[in-house]
Length: 162
Image (cartoon, rainbow, N blue to C red):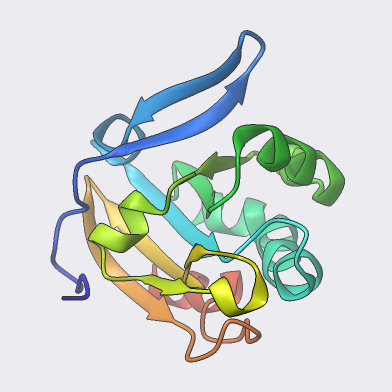
């Protein structure tokens, strides 16, 4: 079953790179008690993610924060080393976007928002989606109907939902 607006995010762990190496972080610690603009991508450095989806959030980071977003989180099904390199390569790190890993696709699978990309050599991946999360609950959710699209999930759409 796919998560819906009004539902709480499932429990789980995400990973991110720190100066001391990869660190596990509880989903509740990332999304609890504040407003987060969340977007998920099938994979770092993939064409649509790299050239369309991430840039929409880098370009609109200040506008999202001006509308009451405490943090912008990008979720990718990659390892923390790749996520850090991608954040640096796209300017996400300088824009204040927290690139986090759902390395085994556990969270997106629990949300009903994963797909099997094995046919393209990718394994389990996140569907492309964006959401507003307030105190751990979805108040807006946008899901693309194909991994190659980044229209319904771009930052400009979330700006209109805040």
